[in-house]
Length: 211
Image (tube, rainbow, N blue to C red; front, side):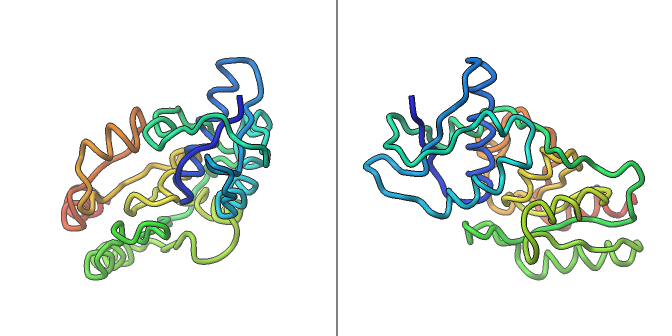
């Protein structure tokens, strides 16, 4: 069977590769993942992300990208159920006093963190003496993972890099930002370990002020 996965954002594509690896491990057969949608439409955004993701994760060699017509589509609820495989890059043994962050979901503008809330978090971290490492604004995925691997933890919204941080093994502290708790915990990140906060003020009070 040749599959295709819905969604084109970084988080969607990361989860799609994770689902494909999990299927391959369960069936002891490589998973054929098409870069075409049902009906034959090519999704270049997904193909580029898949090609960049596969070499970064353990088990990526079990996924075979193809331009053949898919026979079945897996929706986002399906793919996000899969366990996340670790990246080859692992957290540094001795980490810097630094925090990785991303407050803008590139593919989903509704996930943007209000600027005043983002500034409250960043200002608090700077006052605590942390170096701020912004993810997604420069370099490829591998370079961003390398930068994040030396950080103590990640703060942000439900963005693509939150998914990458879970595979990297860096603690994730996420602002709910309008999403329902059920949607985040049960649908987008089922069985994933992360801390969830109502808003920036709650994150600062419950986590950052204790640093």
